[in-house]
Every structure is written in C-alpha cells, then in structure tokens.
Image 1 (cartoon, rainbow, N blue to C red):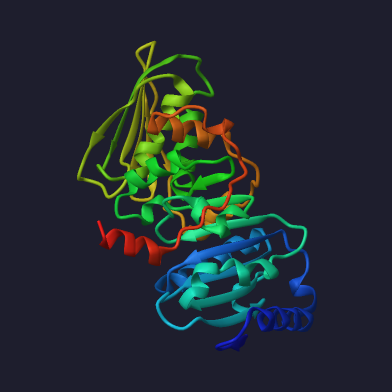
Image 2: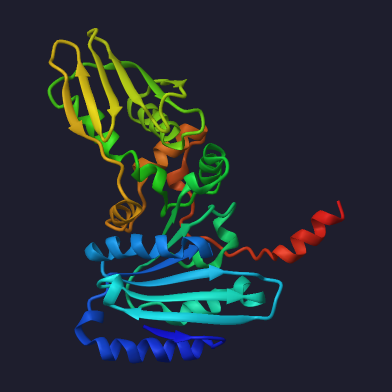
Amino acid sequence: MIGLWDTTGTEVVKALAAERRSAGGVASGLALTLVSVVEEKKVREAEAAATIAAAAHPCRLLIVVRSDVEGRSRLDAEIVVGGRLGPAEAVVMRMYGRLALHAESVVMPLLAPDVPVVTWWHEEPPNMIANDFLGVVADRRITDSAQSPDPVAALRQRAADYAPGDTDLTWTRITLWRTLVAGAFDSTEARVTGAKIVAPDRDPTAWLMLGWLKSRLGIEPVLEHTDRAPRMYSVELQCENGDCVRVTREEGTALFSRTGQEDRYMPLPKRPVGDELAEELRRLDADQIYADALGAMAGMSGLEHRNPNRVHVWKDPALAAIAGSTV
C-alpha cells in the first residue's frame, strides 16, 4: 500500500502506475472501472464489497470520500494493488474543501482505458444523478435506496430521475424472490388474477416487487403492511383455476406452498452487498425489466425510452445553503 497525504492528482496517477508495475500480472485484465462514492464511516464496507465483486469482475476501484467542503482544499490518497482487495486495483481518495465538489478532476485521469465505467453510491443516493459528474460519465449507475432515511420515497425519486443504465440494489435484493415466483409457473399456464405482498411499510423491496408483478402480469397487487418481519415477508399469487402460490420467508429459507402440492423449503439467504454488487456488474447495458418495474411502482411509463446520455447540471451546495437561508 502507498499512502499520499496532502498530495495532487498527478502524484496519485504516478504512484498508481508505479504500483501497477510492481504488481506485474496482478494488475492486468481489468474488466471495468468502479467508482464508489462513499461516506467516511462506510469506506471499509465499500472495500469489502468491492473485494467480493472483483473476484468475478477484476476492476480498478476508485473510492471517493467527500469530506468537509468548508476547509482548505486537500487530497489524501491510499493506493492498493492486489493484496487485501484481491484482483482489484484500488485508490481511496479523501477530498476536502472545494476539491470535494470537483472530484472528477482527480478521478478522470485515473479511469482505466478502454473499459466501461460504473459509478456506485454506497451512501444516500443523490436526488438528481446529473448533479454529480461522476454519475454523468458512467455507463452504469448503481444506487441503494435503502440507504435513504425514507427508502420508498427515494425509490420513487429514482423513477423520476431515471435514465437507461440506472439500477438500484433494491432490485438486486429481490432477484431470488423473483426466481422463486417465476419458477412456480414452469409447469402451469394458469393466469394470475391477483397478488398480495406482506411486508413492512417502509420496505422498498416490497414496493419494487409490486411494480414487477404489475408490469409483468398486468394486475394490481395488494400490499399488506406488517410489523412481524424486518423486510418483505411473503408473496402470494391467486390463479384463475383457483390455485394459490405462496412464498414465505423463514430464517434464511423460503417456504414454497402451492395448492395440491406438498410444501417445500428453498434457500433464500440475505446476501452480502458484495454479492449484490457482483450481480449488477454482470450486465453493462440498460435493464429494461427493472425500468418497467420501477415505472409501474411509481406510476410512470416510458422510462426505457428516455435519453441515456445525461448532461451535467452543476449544483454548488454552498450557494444552495445561502439561497435556503434567505427564504
């Protein structure tokens, strides 16, 4: 590891190049550049998740920590190639003062050449991705609405701000649920006439599941709130032929029930963020199924037809604070 304190972007580029030469083959074959925007207290979490994801997708990891914007502009950096982060090349950049508002000036020269760029916010998602240049330059943008104080409202904002190439880890967290529900219809063609989802009131996965069922089946699912589980508890489907299919979460497993068949237990583990991130990095094109589900959940249509190219909209938080104080 190389530590550079009160340094410049040029020195970081030179140090990374030197460390790559020292590592030799460890630093070859990068699949993408992963830019992670993260709070200071979550840097280790981001590193741990990226280590898991890098095992499947060797990447250059650029962690951007925007610190106090009021003080003197300063850049501190740590450079790690291989080692504790596996096949990833990592640069952890802590930016202070006005430099934190222009992180792209340091990040852009560090992007790996000729590979896609993915920006991942391991913190509360931005209200508008276009306000963050690190999102504008990315081919894929990964947010996590669960990190917001109001996850459901944040998910609706993701629909309002959506552009093809966006995704949210809330969507990734229902992959296993969607697999179980879809698999129930491998042996039947019965039409689904209704659905009920039991979940806590503020669980964004339940709302996105509602949007997915609505967009795929053309029905209006019912969302029943409960306090007996910290996250989505069950999904029940009613079929035209009278059959009922139910998937219920039980301590890392799912109880699969279907009319006329014996109950079965199937795996439904809570996956680490690194596994969720690795899943999203498998595809670098727009996810139309996610767009349909997000739009149905928020009552918006045509999300997949929006312009995928964002234009950076500069927003100075210092000016916004001044404007707010004068109101």
